[in-house]
Amino acid sequence: MAEGSWIRRMFEEGAVLKQRYGEENVFDLSLGNPVMEPPPEFHQELKKLAEHPIPGMHRYMPNAGYAETRVAVAEQLSLETSIKFVMNDIVMTCGAAGALNVVLKTILNQGDEVIIFAPYFVEYLNYVDNHGGVARILPADEQFMPKLDVLEANIGAKTKAVIINSPNNPTGVVYREDLLHQLGEILNKKEAQYGTQIFLISDEAYRKIIYDELKYPSPLRHHRQAIIVTSHSKDLALPGERIGYIAIHPDCSRRDELVDGFIFCNRILGYVNAPALMQRLVRHLQSITVSVAEYQRKRDFLYNHLTNVGYSVVKPQGAFYMFPKSPLEDDVAFVRELQQLKVLTVPGRGFGAPGHFRIAYCVDDQTLECSVAGFKKAAQKFGPS
Ligand SMILES: Cc1ncc(COP(=O)(O)O)c(C=O)c1O
Image 1 (tube, rainbow, N blue to C red):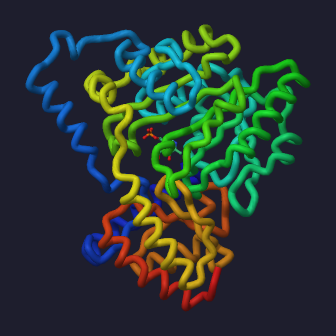
Image 2: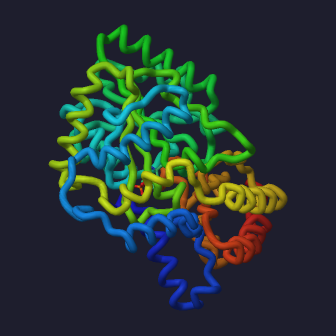
């Protein structure tokens, strides 16, 4: 708990500051809680259902979810990836977090290794641990891309999965097609060498929040033993509603057995099924996303300000995070300095990457605009990063 709670700790210290100085005088960029409301289509669908309830709509259902919702997800994914998904490739879950836990519970035996690249979404470590796995953490390069030679050297007979997250939390980087291709080739080679199945778990929670008119490079086009875990927490701004899904590559070996495992684990981990009402709604919203242009505008504003005052930042191409270098070697000390200036961020060591700090810019414009004075003062005090 002590190790993995930097975001929480910053959030709680921020709450004390807000009490002392007033909510409007503290600029909280510590949490990835989307500022945007769900798109209008969400409320239209909600109203339709409230006004015309469907008999039985609050009852138990199959643990994989409603067939109509699974079909809608499969159709949208087929469009996006040019890979033909069908209903049986999809299991509806309680968010991406639920999806990850269900997948790990299904595939891991005690002591199996799961490779994770730093900086990482810190809950991965807890989820792997939940299901008896061992997290093997590998470094990324200066641009936050996985180091493939290090990956190759670290895959062994016990490697059961590699988790990737693009667009990435905390860095915002998007993995290029050529990198995914090479990664897929390494996994294929190692599977042949050890006679194992190595799953590529693609955490796509931010897949639709992608900038500069990039088309999302799907990892599934480069490895067949691949599983998507994702949700509508960010793309429809519904994190409190806990709605997401697992999608397995249709050509994955032992696909049917794996899907049966997902359905079973969704049940026995106590999720039972993804929320019924949300399944009914997102069925109609598969091609809808919150305003990505809004997030891109916020990214541009912050990136320009930070780089102008001397921060070294890899320009994010998706999600709503930035991960600048800390001007002080000690990222915790720097985050505390920012706290003194009423700007709340999270030290990089909370993501396995000391020497950086994370900014979540999914906040209103006023908070963002007011935060830049603090960033500037800190840069003036400590010099460029
Ligand atoms: C990279 C990543 N994966 C998974 C999740 C969990 O998402 P959900 O709210 O859908 O469970 C988050 C949430 O912030 C995330 O940043």
